[in-house]
Amino acid sequence: MKKFVMAALGGTVAGIVATTQVAGPLLAQETARTANVYEQLDLFGDIFERIRVQYVEEVDEKDLIEAAINGMLTSLDPHSSYLSPDDADAMRVQTRGEFGGLGIEVTQEEGFVKVVSPIDGTPADEAGVEAGDFITHVDGESVLGLTLDKAVDLMRGPVGSEIVITVVREGEAEPFDVSIIRDTIKLTAVRARTEGTAVVLRVTTFNKQTTPNLEAGIKEQIEAAGGIDNVNGFVLDLRNNPGGLLTQAIRVSDAFLDSGEIVSTRGRNPEDGERFNATLGDLAGGKPIVVLINGGSASASEIVAGALQDHRRAIIVGTKSFGKGSVQTVMPLRGDGAMRLTTARYYTPSGRSIQALGVSPDIIVEQPRRKPATEEEDATKPRRRSEADLRGRLSNDSLSEDEIRQIEEDRAKAESAAELRDKDYQLAYAIDILTGLSALAPGK
Image 1 (cartoon, rainbow, N blue to C red):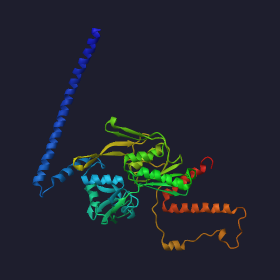
Image 2: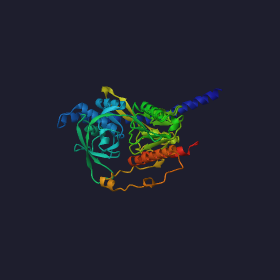
Image 3: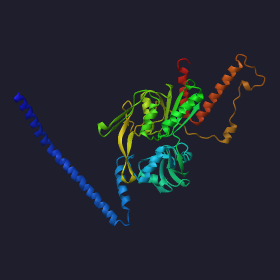
Image 4: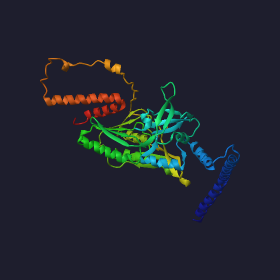
């Protein structure tokens, strides 16, 4: 027994000695690393003092420090940044659903400001700004070389004032100017309507209003249809939705799932990872769902599309999404400012990251650019004649008046669908899918 204890003790001591021998160089490296950090901080202090005292013009020390902090954060990735007290307050207001501005979500790419998406019904949307546009100048001033926050500052201004942005667009030979009148942006998170027998849910952003708006919209449309049995399915339109709150993306996904993982996040340390699962209850009542996405669908939109796609709960239609697969945490700082820091990547239920890749649609459907017909073309377009237009035609003796009325109603629906196809080809395609699935459903 004594030998066993001694052997065990000897083993322990040897382990300690071995560890000490290995830890020595590691400790020395850590000490050298810490010393190097302090040397760099001393260098920063030296440069700061020289600028403060010797720069050609007097500088504001607070502005210098904020610029240094922001430079440090923006060097990490395009989504990390410092928020001044005013910016932090504006962001809090935006997540509540109302703020002043142009109505565009932007990021930075190759030194220029890139439009992730215009927000429905805002001045930028009405002026014709499109997802994927590059903004090169604001009121004639180049944004090249500016941080994203500085470029955004140039675009801010009093409600009612005019701004001219210079846009570079794929497919256009030359840059062009767009004039926009700034306004108060009031976001309606979800707009619900019925097209034929399909309920269309247009989700424009993920803020605190999104889930309540979605639930109310679904309930209202089902009641208007006379019950869920009269609804073929749902179109969840996430096109040009730049994202927003992670919590809202999880709740919207949960609204259409009964169980299973919705999304997981993985940070630098494995123990910081989180998984979010669905709870029982499907607001769509098991009816088919088509999700519409495009290059302006980002972040929270991609979480929803990825979750519903992986669970085979929805058919994804449109074009590849933006590809923002990272999570930002807003951390309050002293002085009422805040730091927006990328702290994790998120993964769809199947474990795939869509960072820089985006969500790929199950069915790729491009939205064709409309070329409006001229009045002359409309006037010369011949009207097709049919048997019903002929004088002295025979009547149809095989159908009752009710059957004829039903045929005419069905024809009117088909004509309405054709008009929608001209206005919004992707949405019409989604509704056609739901119509086809409904026709194949048991009992039809």
